[in-house]
Amino acid sequence: MFSGIAFALLCSLAVASPKYGTSSNDAMGSASYSCGAGLMVCEVIDPTRLQAPWAGSTNPYPQCYNPNLYTCSSNFLCPIDAPKIAGQYACGPISKAVSSPSPSTQQINITINAPGTGDIDGVMGLNFIIDATLQATSAAYDTDIPFKPLYQDSNSSTFGPGKNAAFPGLVVLQNTTVNKGVLVGPNTNLAGLFQLNGVAKSGDLSQYNTIWIAGAAAFGIGPSEITMYYVNGTAGKTMPVNPGASDGLISNVATVAFTISNRTAVVPSKMPQCVNGETYTPLPAMTDPNTPPYSIEIIHPRHGDVVGVNGSGWIIDLQLDANSEQANALITPQVGYKSGFVNQSSPDFKPGPDSLLPGLVVLMSTTVDMGAFKGPGTNLAGLFQINNLRTVDCNTTIEIWAEWLVGKPIAGHGASRIFAFLVNGTAPAVVQDPSNPAKGLDLISRIASVDIVLS
Image (cartoon, rainbow, N blue to C red; front, top):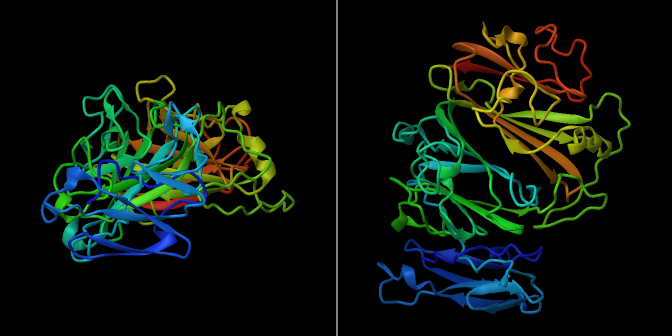
């Protein structure tokens, strides 16, 4: 199995990946490749993985590439004119195609919600997010997954590369991770850095959300790829990029390619800048008075979900997208919108408007009237720990993600309804009329809502 230096190429649109050829994997993990017309094969060997059932063999894993665009040497596949960062190519080693476990052994399904393919995220190399959902594949495996909710930050004893204390078998790798300090390069398991880890039950199956916002510029600038999977038992500080049965793999292997930006602020481009195979679709002009500038979706929880443990330990996950190019001007850094992490010990962490997303309003129909909470009209947006702005649609449109791990049972138990929307300017700390949340406000999105049950 190719590990250690095994990473997918993310240098340009013409990515060298199995889509340029075909591959087949047998039960033992070996691979055979057939490249398309005009494509060549780069063969690589990882000597650290020469173990049973491959002990004593060379077992190369080839990769198709276009010799007119790429050069293949020293186990690296790079564009001929690839730029160099600190003397090294700004691209990654070749990777073997990865197959998921068979349906009979896959216990967990992983979905990477953010970033999306082609997204440009981050400011000066940091403040990009990874947002993922883990769900049991069947009721037979549901009770075998010992997950628990967890909030952590840089002051927590559990915070650091390696095991995630909430989801111990989780593996998160990024092929541009530096080798410096506590990070040991691209094989560093980043799962232990995820700040928000929540639990819910969607339908008959348990569902888990894990989210991280990068607080250090330690993952390079430019194209990057994330790989996520789950192993039986406890994951280590370093893990292979291309896992198999011998690594205890019990999930699919989820990957996404995006771009880490060195910009100083999230400002969209006037002209499309497509990367990672993204296709540009222009947004319409803001001409329909019935269409608000922004759409908003409650990604999690979903309608009918049973969330948390004793009323806490669950995540609200929001996504907001522009409906027109003109909408970008409503949520720029100039009017207070920024990416960042709000530590729970920060004075900004409190009910009321979000210090980083000032127009956001989030309500719950069963919010208690106690202390800083003033009942169902309380704007809970100020409690969102992770706030993220990125550009999508080939760098032409600002998209917002906001996440809150509910740390206390501030909405009681039983049935409740979540409302979320965006207003122009700064949102109120308390809305005038919870039964009519839009009253007296200049909304720039519709009101999204979802009915849930608080465990």
